[in-house]
Image (cartoon, rainbow, N blue to C red; front, side):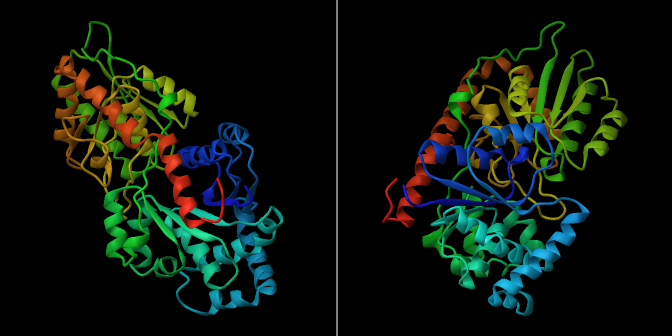
Length: 418
């Protein structure tokens, strides 16, 4: 195939955004040539670089340094871009291009266009998160980018980002982007509210590889000497609701002092020390384990030793919200009972009482009651667990979604053969 698909992302590869790596793998399975344009280099992490070693795609890093050096690099390549493309002065002098950081990123991305052209150019640029799409739309508006633009919206880009930058932030993207892929129906409605053309919106879920997530029957009944094992996977940030999981666990321990319940928390992030301190304060230090960021394979191994997956997502103080968490999909596919919240697109994955359980955001009592129900009425749940697996296979299977994405590409590039 002659055409090339570009992926514009923030950091590649990134442990908390494996869905992007998985999507690229699906394209390679279809023999679709891919160039990844990553705004930032990942940290020197063996787990990250082992993920990159799994695939053979060229990666262009817009910023090649990290830390303090990046500030100097940002200024330097911005100046080079302005000297190379006189039209970029509009980004500096005119409104409509976002914050200072947005404008600097537009200049930096423009500077890397020659490197991208050297690799064969692009026919279509798929941007993950709306604020990356904004960068591409700016270059398209200036005549510096010919590729058609697809943008996947995940949640934070239509919640916290809009609160920070205003409801008109995506006007440029809505003018120059061809297709918009919100990950849930909820975010599709939000795009409509912001003025996006409904004919260019198509809900497209993020998915998982069901073939690599084997469904296993589980015993949920508490047994003498065997703890009820809970698990939670996600970045340690406010919207994941870990503090409510810890509070609910403390209440369960007070209600049932003779039952041992443990919680494994997988993930890293800015709230790590705060959550560790909360666990100690609640007297949970002996039953809560913070594993930090783990490889995908190690995470799946811990999932297989657990019975209940807990992710009480909430709307953060800055407005940040979820899409539909991949961790919930993997837990359902592998046969864990899932407990989450009526938040964002999660009810599009979990139907309360049918394939999992949902409680109101920030309701510790309801969360504790739901976990208690999972344990006490365990013999009732085999049908519910199988229903969870069916939901993921039907609506969130990576291969099916990959096939559909290729079809969307065909519609935008009808002259190409895939």
